[in-house]
Length: 149
Picture 1 (tube, rainbow, N blue to C red):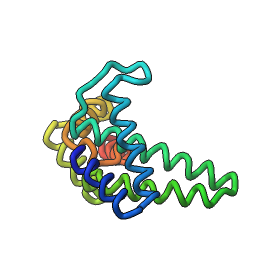
Picture 2: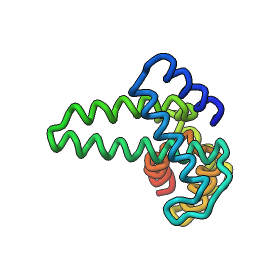
Picture 3: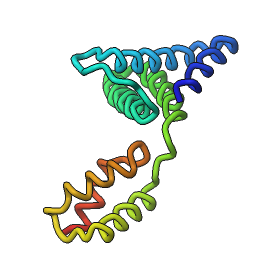
C-alpha cells in the first residue's frame, strides 16, 4: 500500500494535481509520524493494516472538520475537506453497506452463540478482528444492540 501511495505522489507531481499531491503528502507524513512514534506513541513498523487505521483516522478528522466549517459558513473549506476524503477513501478497503453489516453481525452472533447484552463486548471484539477497515463499527454496534435485546 505504501508503494502505491509513493507512486501516486509521483504521478500527482507529474500531472500537476496540487490538491491530490497535498493530501497524499499529508498521508505520507502521518505514516512517517506513526513510524517514529510522534505524539507519545511507541515507534512502530507500519504495515498495510496500520496504514488503514491511519487512513480511517484522517477521514474521521476531515468529517469532523466539515461539520465545523459548515457551521461557521466556510463552505469553501468544507468542500476542500470533502475532496480530501474522496482521495483518502480511495486507499481504504471496500466498506460494507448496511445490509452487509447486518448480515456479518448476525452471522457472528450465531457463530459465537451470543445471547444477550453481556456478550456484546465479545462480539464487537471479534467483529473488529475480522472486519478491520471494512465496517463502520458505530453502525455495527447499533445493529448488535438490536440483535442482542
